[in-house]
Image (cartoon, rainbow, N blue to C red; front, side, top):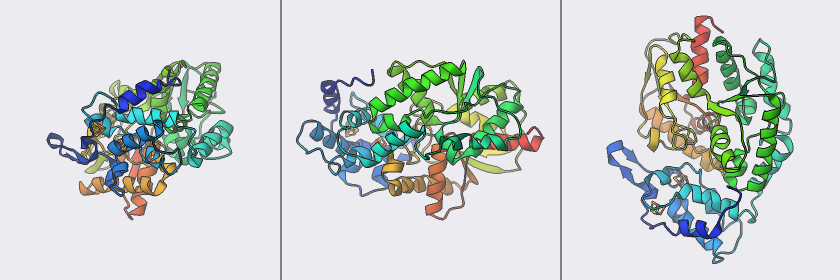
Length: 392
Ligand code: SF4
Ligand code: SF4
């Protein structure tokens, strides 16, 4: 169980670190990949800005060598948990996963940001706003009825529902065009992802049980998700907490299949449009969805998909994950700007991604460097292509 972390085992795992430092800025020559840790690349460059230093801080706090103060624990939280270090680390442990567990074990160290997010979710069912009803406001704008119970459920998630409702509108437009009967909950609970990543594990468990209860009452047999973070939480973390749900599927898998079965016909958005795809860490490195979004993009006639210098398994993070966007939003946006620069370097018109949280942060990153680079979700691109066909 994720809630029962074995402290001895955790320390033993952390001790596997050989202090080689390749998780800082190693080069995968055959992949043209230079620079592993997005935080190290975009911050002071001190030892605690990448995994080797974080592990030493974690061990010192766990063993009582360092006093448990917010200042001493800072290195535990300035990490997006992107998993790039895990990909390159040759030692017998998963550093990013261990760091997440360390946060849970050391959750008695005060951290106002972590605690206020958890309290917001537990009280209001989302980490952003007091009024959770805002999550369903977009329904009024789609021009057709959406029921709140049914066998296929579109779980919108907090970021799309509140911050980027266009993703929700595009998704339901596609489902409708493909003749899928679907529902959207009247009162959607939060999946609790950020509580898990930041160490509020007991709250996350309580929330997960309530989530499963609401889903069961809705009668859903299949849940479609547009957020990479929600997907990882519901498919990887919930089972580890002993919480069961019906089948959960990401929109890119679902969409790839309905495009293949010719249920949707996509039209050109114009000749010679050049785009790139940003892999969300939770969707790609964590769950292996590399091809599905790329196949969808390529199914749109006349679109040219080109890759950034780091892509697929080596893709640099957008900077939003692991609670970093809340803990240090300046650093988080700087990392996003770094990612946007990679897209600018290959001269594309837009960055396509498949996670609202990535879209939100990459857009903020483009803003701070005055770049007009458009950032869209793959569902927006598909919905645009349907509109031109007159399907919408
Ligand atoms: S975490 Fe892995 S890659 Fe980084 S210093 Fe330790 S052993 Fe090396
Ligand atoms: S998980 Fe990502 S951000 Fe965190 S230390 Fe590893 S590479 Fe850096």
